[in-house]
Length: 282
Image 1 (cartoon, rainbow, N blue to C red):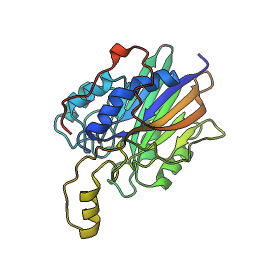
Image 2 (spheres, rainbow, N blue to C red):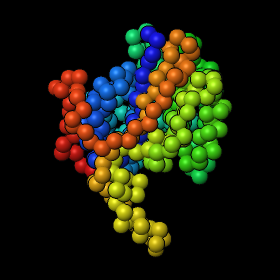
Image 3 (cartoon, helix red, strand yellow):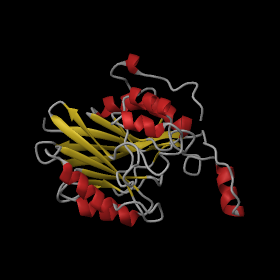
C-alpha cells in the first residue's frame, strides 16, 4: 500500500453535530476513499461531554476512533465505558488513575495506526506535561506503528505549534482541536509531519462556538452565569483529510481542509449503512 488516507472530523457539538456526522461520515469516506476515520466527540452531548449510548452510535456511523478533551468527564458513566472501549480515548496526560486510555493502536490490514490524545496546559488544567507524555507513549511502542496521529486539545496556538515542532520526524500528524474555529495554516513539514492548528467544529456555525448567541453574549455583557444551549442553524461538518505513505515512516503527502454543509447528494458506498441520529436529547 503506497497511500493511506485518514479523515479527522472536528469537534462534534450537540445533536446538530451528531446528526450531520451520521449523515456525512460515510459520504466523506467514499468521497476521499478513506482508510481510517477519527472524530473528536467531547462536546457531543449538549455541548458538554458524551454519553456511552451516543458514543456507540458514533462508532456505528463509521468512526474508527474517538478523541476527546477537557469536557470528557461531564456526563456520568463515560469513565466506565472508556475502560471497556479502547477506541474511545481521553487526553493521555491526565494523572495516573484517570479512567480509560490516552492512545489507541488499530490494525488496518497490514498497517498499524496509532492515535494519541493530548491536552494543553496553557489557560487550561494543570495536568501532566503533554510533551513528556508523548515521549513516554512513543517509547512504549515495541513495534512502531506505520502511522501516528496526535490530537492536541489546547487553547494556545503556541503550545500546539510547539508540540508539532517537538514531535516532527517522530509522528505523522499533529492535529489541533478545542477552539472550534478552523485555521488556514495546514502544512507539511520538511520531515513529513502534517499539521493544522485547529480543525474547526462539526455543528451549528450560526452560533458562538456551537452555542446559541443570546446566552453566550449575555455572559460577556453582564459577567453573570448563563446556561448555554446548542444552536441549530447553518450546520456543517469540518475537518481534514490526510494522505500518508506507510512505506516511508508514515510521512504525510497531503493535508486538505474541509468545511461543508449537509450534502445528501454525495453518494454512499452502501446506502443501507446510513444510520439516522433521531430522537436523542441535545
